[in-house]
Image (cartoon, rainbow, N blue to C red; front, side, top):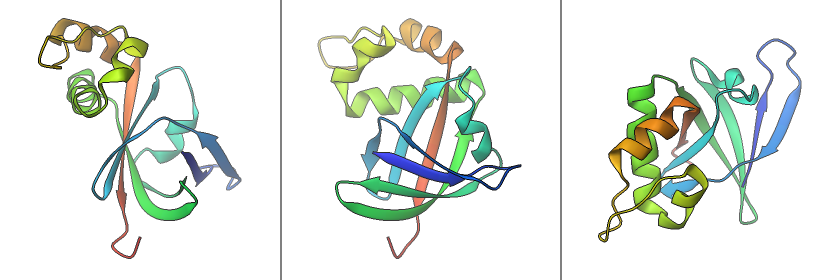
Length: 120
C-alpha cells in the first residue's frame, strides 16, 4: 500500500510504501521511531491510501506511547501472523504474540491508525 500525506511544515505531498493490516474501515500501520514520515500525522492528518488499485481517503493518527504501541502491534500481528518474524516476535501455538517480545518491539516502533472516511 502507498500512503500519501502533506508535510506539516512544507506542505509538500509525500507518498511512501507501507505494510498494513486492514480491519474493516481501519488500517493499521507501523514504522520505526527513527523514521520521520509519520511525524507529519501527529495530531491527526488527512491521508490518501493507494491500495489494490483504489484511492481511499482517511484520517491518520500516530500512536507513540510504548504501552499503546504494544497494543497496536498485538492487534496487527494477531491479524497477520507471518509478519511476526519481521518484528522478532514469537507466536504461541494458537498464534498469539509473545507479550515480552511485543513489549521489546514497541520500544523501537510507532503505530499509525487510519480511519477511512465514510464515503471511501
